[in-house]
Image 1 (spheres, rainbow, N blue to C red):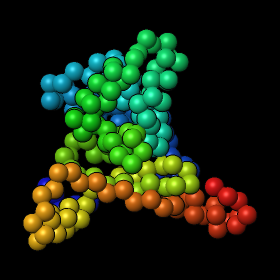
Image 2: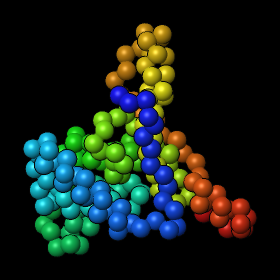
Image 3: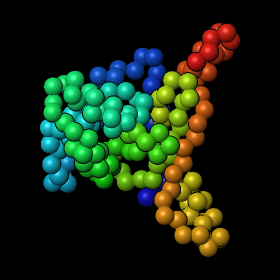
Length: 172
């Protein structure tokens, strides 16, 4: 694993989300081609729906959106698509929210943590080899067998902090 920290940022007000979604979809299609995996129309649409915002999306929210699209999807098909996308590293599951977000660097296998803004709901991804190493070292010292690693940090993103600072009466 690289020593480089892999991270996404919270979107800025100038963020071009259309370009963001197009780039993520292009990368997903490229990776599936290289890995000889099938990105079916349903999997592709689920992926696009996840990337439509930087907020975690639940399976049932995805199901509702698919039905609004006119698809006759059911919960098991959505969960199978999510399982495929997660196993391919194209999306991550935010455990505490039972929801999914797009992976910022799907071509690089990595353990991931999240910074979750409690005000706006946006999520930023963090994969830091030093943090992973520290967890491994601590587990080894304790004789602890790790079954899964999950780091979710809740707080307030820069944009929401600025809003609170600008208008102390405003509650988010």
